[in-house]
Image 1 (tube, rainbow, N blue to C red):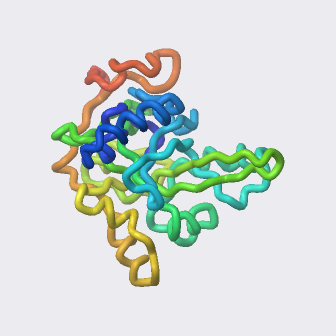
Image 2 (cartoon, rainbow, N blue to C red):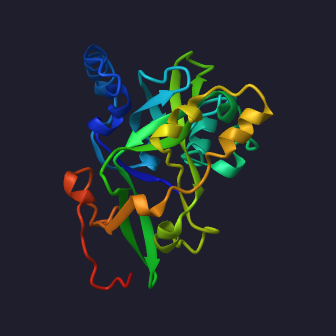
Length: 254
């Protein structure tokens, strides 16, 4: 699963910076960043933060979107609120089948750049949060789906996204051991040379199979993890930089 992330402005702008277009970067910082919740040292998807996403229709210039995909067929805000918390993640194995995701999987894919993500480990009836990031501290490119929902009552619209997940690697099998979930999960992380393939248009069944081939666990030898302070409850520090720093628990055997 992937419900908690860290996303700095630098990570979110990493794809745009590859072009070296300083004017475009300045435009993004002036026109888009003020409408996001950046920086996010820790953000829960259940708070539905605003981030930058790079879509198949705008692969180099990002758009502001809300975490929690709202399909175009949602009737009203009441149905939206009932659905929203259930579409923070999309299981990669079923994105072409589930009604909430299949249209977006075929026609509206995106990439979300983050610094790292958090996951909870269960031990002795307690939970301990871990922060997972790349060993080289480079931004992580997450595969996502996006949608544009138009409110039929007001005519207003919002863009939303979900993070695609896949089977967890060996590291995640040790960390993500929630007894309520069948098997370890992790967000679908794309290697840099595969990012554009995720955004490529789908023309036929062969293209779908190519896309499905990208849905696999990221190599554990390129990631590292450490425990951090609590992300829930009375001891939660909030959206502060210290939240991602290493913190040891004396009662945790790991």
